[in-house]
Length: 215
Image (cartoon, rainbow, N blue to C red; front, side, top):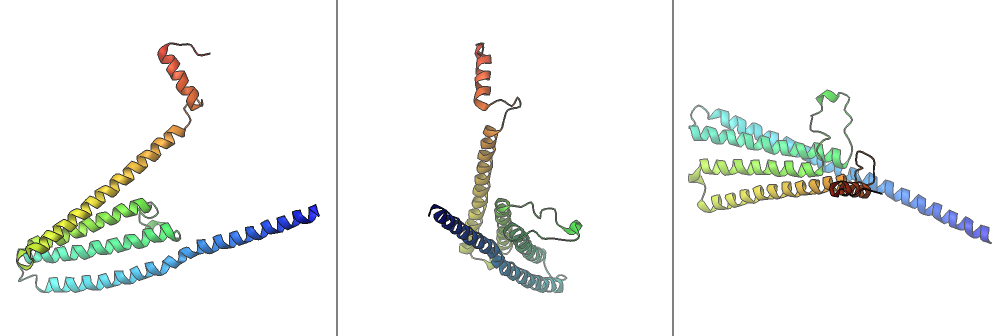
């Protein structure tokens, strides 16, 4: 009877282990559900390219008769689209490598230096930095053409830009505090150079300072 009960327990544990491993494999494979999102972003990048070419043609057609302000506005529009495309590309590459799989490139020399080095925290900061830059360009375009924009629109654009800037500062400060806390925690658990226990090392330092000989 005892051996039969033990065998039943073993079979039960084996079944639970098999179910657990199957569930873990399914959950791990679910990361590929994110792949269509990045494919969609690639299509969005194509749309941005089409719009960029359209703006470039429109800019080139009227450049000979345009004023200085119009030339600056046209250049800012192209820069705005370029920054947006950079933002989309950053999300595609970093998101894919962080959440799906590392890209296996045959020629590693064509691999950008930042790929594989940006974690989720770094991605957040780069995203908010790109959004702040895009918002700043939109605000600058409005200041360059004040006649076409109302005071109310400029006011709200300034407020939104300030919110983006403060959000970026807050995220950077939060990450800095988190990294600093982790660094201090790692230092507290790190062994001292002499290989002594931390408490023993502190007691030794205190005894040396007070001039009291240690037992």
